[in-house]
Image (cartoon, rainbow, N blue to C red; front, side):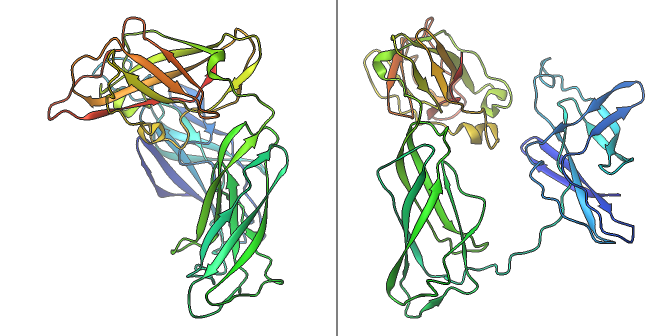
Length: 405
């Protein structure tokens, strides 16, 4: 075992350790190991499986002399770190003991600041490079043909049109792969039907029938379908389009919902980077199903703020994932609301808004599933974030995904 360095970013840091198979037979290290940090005079701390950078590693059999790696991650930002103003405590441990799946353990020695927790990745082995790093159909372009709607729990039948705009035939050898997904890009490569189609003829278009299973619990609403050729270098060959998913849930209509917001707004804490700098205020919003029929909400609403005269304040929607520097800020479940049930989320107002106080405000949130809207006036108003030095800006507004109340 040896320490082979580390990396990180955005408040997330990790150290990587290498485990070498010194025996004469193949073996494998796989999955999340049990990792416990210890330090004299301090309680033992067990690492959590997965982190911002660690947890997606893939294992493989190690031949004699080959190696696997394990990364341990620590975090900079958490409530404990910022509980006392102008005080940033640390909690240093120097040993982390890793349980080996086949028996025994190994002690790793490094400096681990676990004030905000300790996170372990999986044992991983560098995966072999693909047979080709460039698609054999470089130069082709793709378009997607989608139906208008699909039922959750069925298979989406659609078509990809690959056009060869070049003067030369493109040979599908080695047979290229593609990836597809709904709601996000696909990860598992699938192969074209190369035995049936061996060439993309010059200046012609070839249509490929595609099938994409739609999960039974996929929610009602418009969804993006992503398709791309699985090549590791440019140029990118891909296409995307929208399809309406008919799920088992029934999105709430505008007339079924009422909203309530309390003010005047508080400064959000980590992982909100604007909040850490005091450049944001946040208010909670409660949506109530005031009808006599069950309905559902899901996802992140858009937010619009209007003063009493109805003027547009010029506040675009913020990218909450980028602000929190996280792949996913908060999970977005489908929330089924029986009559009288509530869903909640937090709305954010970011600098630079340097105009006069626009209160009383009318806040309108628009639900992503069906475009339903609901309005509320914050009780006590909604205080804008402080205006920084410099010329007035436009600020931003945002929201977290809706959650069950």
